[in-house]
Amino acid sequence: MFNWKEIVVGPNDSIRTTMLKIDAGALRFAIVTDESGHLLGTVTDGDIRRSLIAGKTLQEDIDGTYNPSPYWVCSQTNVAEIKAYLLKNSLLAVPLVDNNVVVGLHTLQSLSVSNRKSNPVFIMAGGFGTRLKPLTDTCPKPMLNIGGKPMLERLIEQFKDYGFEKFYISTHYLPEIIKNYFGSGDKWGVDIEYVHEETPLGTGGALSLLPKGKITEPLLMINGDVLTKLNFEQLLQAHNESNSIATMCVREYEYKIPYGVVESNNGKIVGFIEKPTYHFQVNAGIYVVDPKLLSKLNHQEKIDMPTLLENNFSFGIHAAVFHDYWLDIGKMDDFEKAQQDVKDLNFV
Image (cartoon, rainbow, N blue to C red; front, side, top):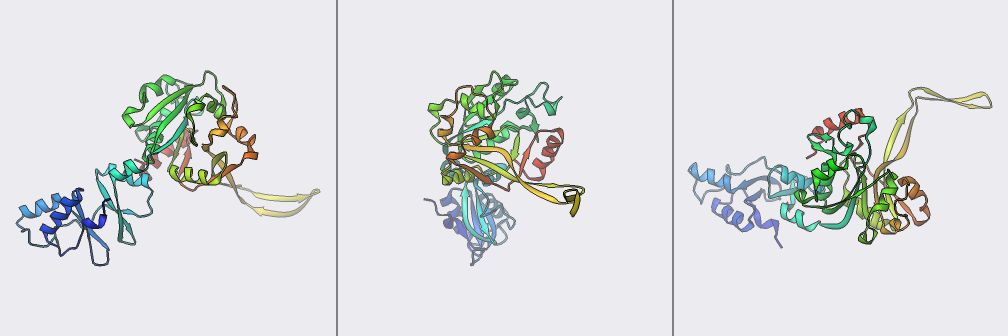
């Protein structure tokens, strides 16, 4: 197994020593730290080549050769965001840093191989998107571009970054646009199958169209019009630890009443609450479903997801509260907000 410490050098190490470490690591760079492990920079084979052309010798140290403003990520960053960061910046690897001390290294190869998951993902993409007309007159809502990329494509890429490679997509409105764009999923390195609702079956009923014999592990389910930075890997882990038949993602929602609230009893005022704020937990349209729940559905049964879960409370339904970015793109205001959010929040 590769040991990242083998490509660590100090500012006083020679160019020759650094070249040997870069060559041994096969990542085209070395990490430069002080004696306490604090990140000072990185040095690439290109940095060394330019230094030698400028007249430095192999025996001289790398001080002045390495880049003092290197790429790095916080050690708490989730793997999907690290992978996206590597791809965006065309990097093979990136140091993990905690309080300016290098504590590890993530490589693109390790992230692409080690986190593969066999759990399927079910994306509901059959809605009409009525509130987004006229944009949806000729385009299904999940195929509307957010930051130059269809919502549905963003979801597939996010799940892929977390290691999910098997997808089912439910269609109804303008299904050919979705199928023609994604096909079998080869372009994205995933496998996509489609289930078509001849008539809308509701969010829960669409599950009845899945090939039950193929679903042998918990399935992640999401509305196709959601923009989020949820850690899907942690969601799956939380579900597995809950021993529940299903998990619903819930968000804290704050509602502030813009008026003074009057409390009364038998026609007499007993108190006032000035512009109170109430907090609720709301359904985020993201679920993890155990195969046992699928077996309780009849083929083409029409039912929404909350009702399906309510009917199975006795088997345990887990509420996974999350605080990551989330936006349900249902109205034009949401659509416009999403366009700005993908820029401000560095969506890939």
